[in-house]
Length: 158
Image 1 (cartoon, rainbow, N blue to C red):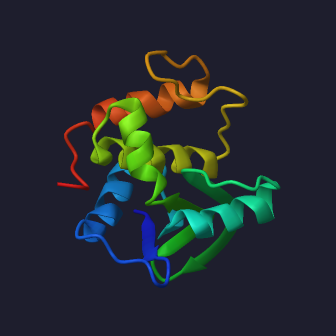
Image 2 (image 1 turned 60 degrees about the vertical axis):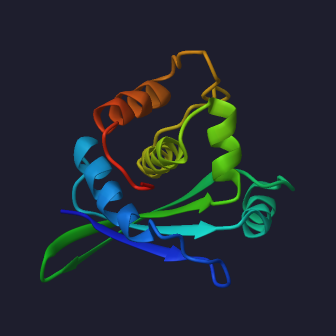
Image 3 (image 1 turned 90 degrees about the vertical axis):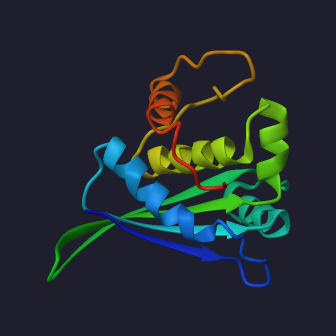
């Protein structure tokens, strides 16, 4: 079992598919065989994402997804939990990426979520990034694409 908390940046309109994010994240976590995790996710705009990227990565531009690892653990009446961290996704960059990759917004959102989950669980892709028309070679991106293939029929954005 996993706990997932999804929120919207203040002042950003909640998309009509917002309620579909949490169930997808839980399915992705199950597919990755990650259990006992607590994850927070924030959907935001490019302005806020640029602020985060500048503050935490010294990069003064927006990006599609950021992951902030935590690794704090606690126990409650339901069991032991690992707060693996936070994922932030820019809803402004989502359609730009989808157009670039010639994918649906739904498939791009799923890619960003799985990418963030893998980063929160200690994986890294170094300098390699998903490129249109090029198969990934590093372990993280290969796993990401394999998980997305298994979840290809899942719909967040309908």
